[in-house]
Image (cartoon, rainbow, N blue to C red; front, side):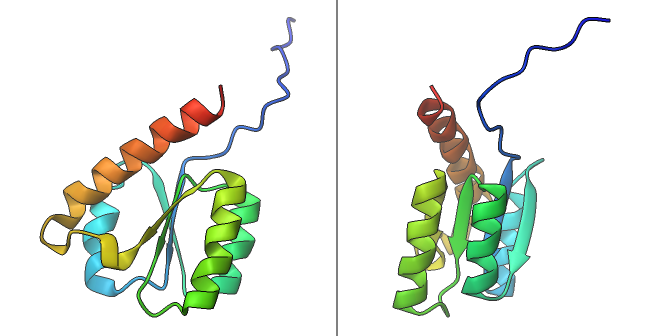
Length: 115
């Protein structure tokens, strides 16, 4: 039986992480994530733990997160190659399509960074 070749590259699962995102925006944005797994957390501490463990492709940070916590999440996201998006940047009138395009861009960026 032939073994598959091993690789030294880390293959992160395709995950989008929502951190304390408002319900209406969360529901609309989740629809735009298509087949990508969406995880939701309420606190920055939980978010940073999951960022390190899962290496999400995109992290959406809610408006209730403090500037200091947002900065810490940004540091973690950047270190793992995730794209950080703030809820206030979401086009609320077209959140589903906006998120779909954001996820596509994050997937492309992840692929470019892995080359």
